Image (cartoon, rainbow, N blue to C red; front, top):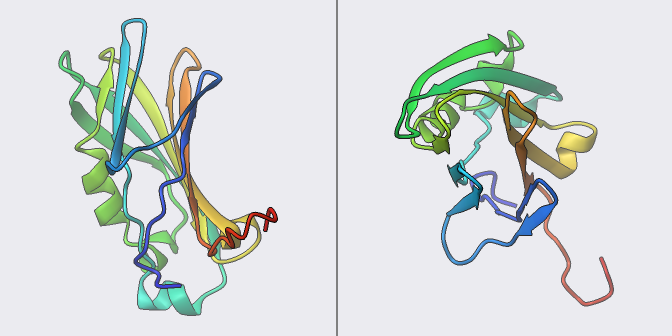
Length: 149
């Protein structure tokens, strides 16, 4: 499988299953909350393709009154992560998200080449009151023969 391919599977938001259409982004509206999240492309570097690793990066994201990302700060990042994953591309994508209401969000990215990260990478967005979205990006090719494999 080409490491540049990104497969967008779905979102689970507060018990609601949102299936994506043809778009590369999804918008979820619940009450006065609105999350417009572009499916971010994640790519391994050459060093990352050769390494065995698993890492989690945690960002603090604050939005303005219009829901645009006003600031993004790295709270936790393994020292090797930027050598193995193109985080700049992910951060640029996050900067284009629209998250309402204007508040503080935690964004967590988990990626790697071992354990559960061999099958899938994920990122999640959590509001401080516990409302969250988790996006799963499968890294393996699914066999859609109708037999569940």
